[in-house]
Image: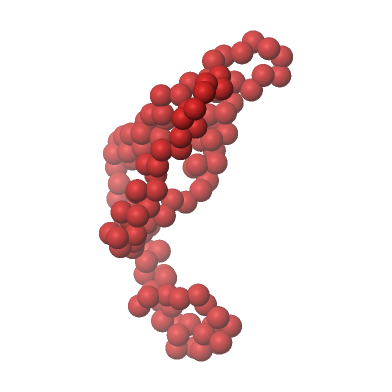
Length: 120
């Protein structure tokens, strides 16, 4: 069953509501079972590998000793916190391959910030 945007009328339809609830409960149980079956070693390795890929930009921030300077460690902690708290649709289990490919392509766009004269 494919879900559309839930309207008030569809939520009032008891049959539709019950079917939706059953499907979501089964999906939640299946997802939780899959997550709990991952070994801690594998989970740690996947976590490290994923973050290693994220930080492969080739860009670094020099350490500043100036008072109140925001250095790379603070920026990295902030980015890490934000990214860990944000779900990523590319890792959804129920996504079709066309959408996964489209999302994957969007991750590798050249932003062209160094296309003209140096700003550093």
